[in-house]
Length: 336
Image 1 (cartoon, rainbow, N blue to C red):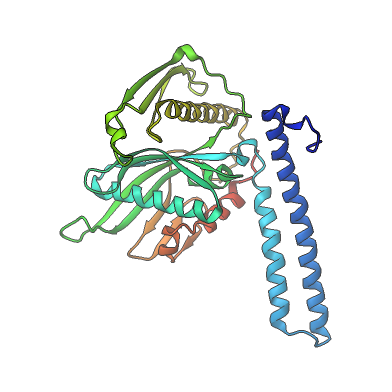
Image 2: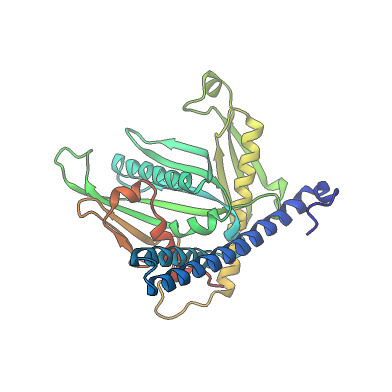
């Protein structure tokens, strides 16, 4: 990998692909060296403790640090598939239930955005549809960052909320659902065939923030793409709306990028369906399955696939979902 070569960046696409490999190698090399150093520190701390030159707390601290570094490498080892390294596209759709469900969808959006912020990921909202009174009916946003899809793919499925609704005059305990869809964010280094003749466009006036231009100019775009679905082998249609910016050409470009991501996900689905070996006793992971319950009154959030749970509901809603992601990856990650 001659990254210092004068002509290295002449082919930008190939260069970026090589730089991804460099970053991956650096992660593993640095991670190995950090673990090696931490385990040596833990060994020395124990030796000093036996000679009464260190206290027990120092040994515990050194040991905990080494274990944390080893677990970080172990977790990353669960992200071995090609698509795991990519960014992600997250779509949240409120279920039936009106304002309560729409409020829940917005709460999930906030949860994921807080998580992304903590991870240092860049988030861009592609399209959002406000609720009738509060919350949102749906939202689609892109998450850019290394391994964003690998970590966030665990969130695919139906999320269930149980709480005393602030929108119910009788103060009844209500159950709401929202669906979360996570697909890889395909970049320019991934070749996806799109038949241009099968694309049609609609334009419309965007609503929401953005100044007078948003409502006066038809900057919003709606892409229609007809194709043969590789999973069902039937003719199908993908419809994508994008109102990300006030520039129509840019919105078209973003819509095409989202189309490429969806087509790539379908190819992955076909590939996995052909090669997957479903082991007896394991729960099947499907897009439509209910994966997690958030029971506010009982102060409990539980994942039904891994049985991982926590009583710190507020922390979860503030984006601290690392425990759920880790539990999922350690059980289902790394499967080829």
